Amino acid sequence: MTKSFTPEQEKVLQGWTTHYPYPMMGLLMAMRQVQEWHSCVTTADEEFLAALFKTTVTHVHGVVTFYPSFTTEPAGRRRVCLCRGLSCRLKGSSEMARYLSERLGAPDGGVSGDGSVGFETVECLGACDCGPALSVDDELVGPATKESVDHLASELGKA
Ligand code: FES
Image (cartoon, rainbow, N blue to C red; front, top):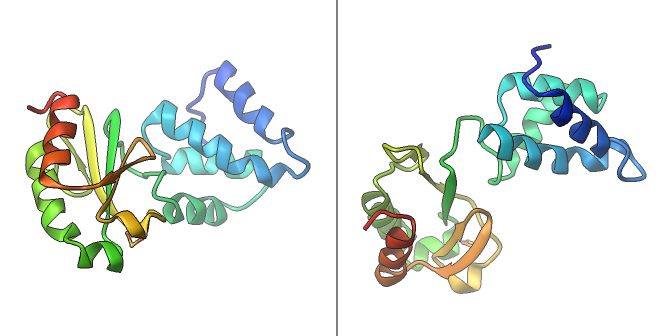
């Protein structure tokens, strides 16, 4: 098992194993913390969490890859996600994905050259009625339009 946490960070992660009635209930919160610290959840992190929560690496990896909030590769300091689910595709998410990628200077699934912004298309964000659903740092910011994307790009320093 590779350790990649400071003693303080380990203490925080350990805390999530006892925070809820069942240790496994704290796994998601621990993962959120790891994602924030490392900008992703690496294989080494998965191994560490599996040992900590007394489960398998396969289980941890399944959770990491299920939720769009987690990435296995370093994400940008700010994370922009656009839904590519069916409802949003019908509302133009494919075209918006190309536009976002161009305006942010980051390919789908990649990070801008300066590492400041990560962009990815993801499955349903649970906001099908306001598609193409766009989120920044896991917070829904409404439907993506050329205007809202331009505004977001300038807010993120990508004018
Ligand atoms: S299909 Fe896009 S939010 Fe549900």
